[in-house]
Image (cartoon, rainbow, N blue to C red):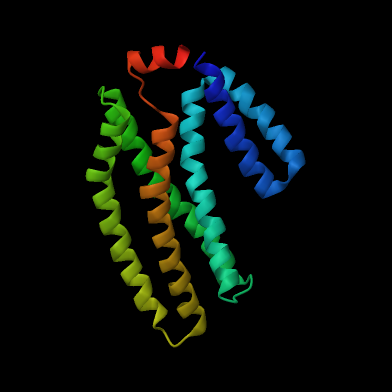
Length: 190
């Protein structure tokens, strides 16, 4: 009974991402692929993979929205930032996901696991992001336009990656891995 909502979550996430990136035809294909992968591998690994990818996808959308609003078009700098943001953002979210998995494997509840993530990995990621943002903000002060733009968008990208990994990923983890008490399950059935 718990299997169907997890498959639905996987299908929804995969369909949404593929629809926004590639169109409706691909959304159908990836929806079917999500069902097949959920049945073959189980729903938890695919949910974790989707949770790892989704915040970074949103961060790239936010970054390009900022690029468009700021009036910068697609050029060598803005296109290269997308590739860099995938690398940085995925690393941040993987740290969060792995720490969450470790805590869950140790028998912690979902909320306690998320608290542990914020208390340990979150502080380290925040410190790392602040130092990186500072470094790229210094590069932004360059007189050379290419380096200045690169520094600006890298600083923004790291800030958005931090938001995606410390706010979006734990929120989605909390929704996907709800802990139910026996009384709550009985109340839902009745």
